[in-house]
Length: 489
Ligand code: ADP
Image (tube, rainbow, N blue to C red; front, side, top):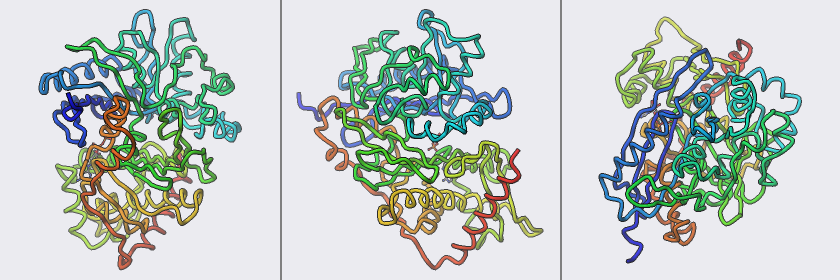
């Protein structure tokens, strides 16, 4: 039989939902199923999810899509996931010892502050900064919470936990992109870093084995026929792959709950001088490609805030019409840093702010300010990337995520960054990315050119220079960022 009809089952375990999608080789989605995933916030700054629920939902959505399409043509599985989210479980019972601590969780902020003097060495080893965002301090918190490490405890990010469950405890492994977000993995030697494990207080032997992204990780026999797990990748790295950013200097920026921009920096680690993260974007056949990453914790979540908390509109898409019903923000600046500032500021204590209110301010002005903030945030990240990599490197940005359905936002990003913004016709860049990796591992795709061949642009937004408030708007934004840092709790 030819490879033509062969399909990949891709699992997308995200912060807001768990999905399963079936892809063909053209990047077309043949079937999909989704379950919303609740979040609990037991204390201010704490964010947790039920790891058992995550697993049950994965099984349910997989069964659902398999029932829709039949299992015969499915060649294997790819897994992409919310990164950094931390699960510790007991290998004997298979039970998590604590809820999954989600990437957004800030409970280890004080511990991270105590690591500030070590930040230079941490960055050199792991490419990351001492921030609660990453898994390491979350693992340590769980161990302390349950009275210390004991035999049989295993750690995994969500990919690793799902792999262990899918293989019924036979395989404890992860992929190199997820490993590189733990703050325990040395991104130069490609090994768990003993000194880093000792610094944080995490026993080395509870960590999973690390493999390339395209790798036959194991086999699951939970469905009607055995299926190999052929690829795994953290969500932002998978999106960079799905957007076919294979050349040095290419950038993708995803606007979902948060905003994550990655620039391909080639075969060598670039340690940022501008507070960006260095990360492995993929490793295939033992050869790693690196990226600089700017992570902003709140992007689309600010639109949800306007919709759900402030009741400005009923649907996220209505934000565009409302914002465009006024000519400008009338001096309003909205900084959506509800859970602290990410790159390039890294201030976990900062909180959001609306500045410049006047008697004439309306919901439209505030909404426009929230949409404009997406452009300013992206400009901050691109400024840092250009400072690290040189001004000629940035040519365009490939965008994806729920928020980029909003044309006004895409245009604003183009105006502020001064480069072309390309929106792909495949809205599923993240999950397609890991499906494409699985097609490679299955030998159905022969090389990266096959993935470049699938990429199609839906629309391009060119920067406009005739925007009146372009510079004054950005200057107000910069002043607002300073103001909230001095106001930090
Ligand atoms: P995630 O994968 O992080 O759950 P998505 O990529 O699904 O996020 O994007 C959802 C986010 O995009 C939500 O926060 C929503 O408010 C926002 N969003 C969706 N459509 C629009 C739109 N047309 N305009 C503005 N924001 C939007």
